[in-house]
Length: 280
View (spheres, rainbow, N blue to C red):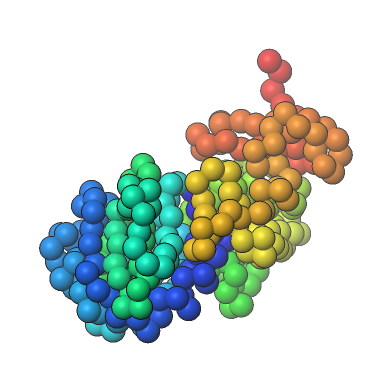
């Protein structure tokens, strides 16, 4: 599922291509992707609206319209947001769930093979309520170690706490695995057991891995594409995620993958992260 670096990459690609453009013939091809709005009202509201800006919040791409309404798109596992010049081919239209003209011959397209992504249309009040339930952005300059300490509360596993969008926005399974490895912390430890030294190391690891993933334009294993349709490149720089059974790049021990922490794959080094595998 696209996380902060992937959605941020998409938004950075789309923003200069979409900002300031009026929307023509907005069409929802698959209404089941809509949340809290009808197809008719969505298309009517977007028709001839102007996109004032495009930005990311957590794992969402947010399109601010001149009406101050916001189109909020969460790509999830198989969603792709692209701008395409000219007419769309049959292949491009096959999995299109939303398209709109931009008035210059190009189209904004949201494709989603499995239709796991969602689209919402939120008024300023609705957006304020929605946004208030999401935690702070980890790459915000104002997000310091003191703010990060508020993530490390409760007895839930530290990996699960890092992925709690109410505590901190945008981090998912890939980057939680990577940050915990860099900080040499057992992903199953209770969040409130992390001491101040470890918290500082983890804070720096979270930010470093997100910045690096942004530099490489995200991680592509299968479906993720940037806003220009290209693959990301951070998959070639992962230390643990997706590498279960391979040697640790730090100590050479065999990396272990478990689903015990939160039902999702967690890969770690039992030696570097101070946890020995259970006997078979």
